[in-house]
Image (tube, rainbow over all chains, first blue to last red; front, side):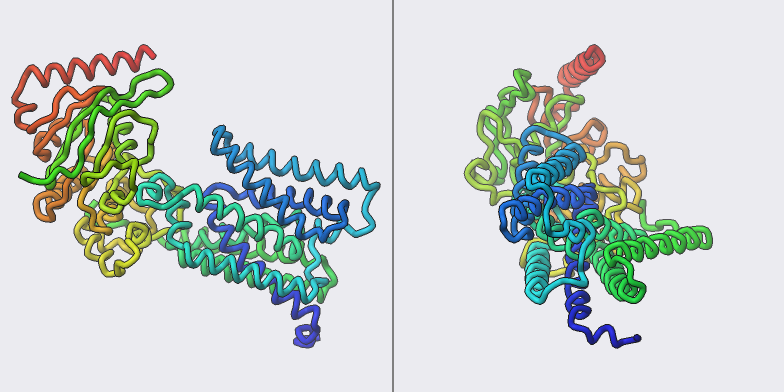
Length: 280
Length: 243
């Protein structure tokens, strides 16, 4: 088979969409992981499930309703969290369960859907259409440009909110923008790995990159590389062995994480860390 | 006579019926080195929060460079702030240079970072991860970050809490140079009376209300004032224990 599979249209669309989603997830995910919001992606995906069910129930294109429901509920909960000082993990739990509950109720009201919900739960990247590929590319491009333009604001507010505020950054606005961007990223990535595995694309490449890198830029580049590698190899091998691509992509990213952990511990045992010698 | 950079008039802060600050008034002139002393819970951090625009629920007026801070936040561009203990995710992947870069203004070039790291004796560690540094070194990184935008005023909130003696001495030397050589106005809150006596030209003694503001020597040579300060500290200490 070799390189022949890359000549198929569906495979080209899957690879292009997969790479775009991987880049989006790794970059947005780094900010979420560092803000200790690793499971926020999971919660957004579950609320998107409610949105998908609403779309199917109302006869609207489900991806649009998923975008609207997940972004609005995430913004609402962020506001509630700030106003009533509810902890982050509790917010995640509320968002996650309310989305799922909404989805389950709508499905039972409709007496089950004819459309296969399985593809939303576990992804269907090999079936992605040209229109969707263009949409994903547009969204990924826009998100990466916004992050590049507001790079300092995003990094600074993630590093220390209070100091960012003192330096004149509008911290609340940056946080809301991040929530919107995370919502778009999660809903887009459902096509690649599905609702149930989305948060793994957001978390695993970043945690792996953080094992090796010292700086933020270095971490971002490494994380993007791990995510893209997992997506490409996952899609190709899943087709070759007829396995669900979503699971394969996540499995590869977990293998990279495991190997990295091994390398890291080997390096720790082999070398003694250089002491920091400047004036202390 | 130097220009008044900061003017605080009748500043009062009320947290759910408890007065944290009561009618505090003082001013800071250009090139001053003001040490704000007071026991735990005296309201030092509350005062700084108001001055930095982090707390807006106060009575009275705060002016920086002659402008009420409620009207404009432009003054923040001229302020460098070093918090008590900078909180950040321990394994945050940022190098020393990247942390300092966060303080850069839009039109500034990157080479300022090296200069400012040299000032705080950290240029050799610019590529280290911030979390790998000692507490004292981290605080110097935060001074560098506060200085990189070339502010007129540096505000430090008990910056040496939990730092070893050797690091403290180096830290104080850096502060002295910044004030004397670079002519930066410094507002610094501290528990360390000896250090304040050595470094600060002006002293403000705070314990919910301001009961002294003036020249440092005047405070440290006045036994009544020193006695009053230690008694109020003791009272505050006992009050904390009772609670």
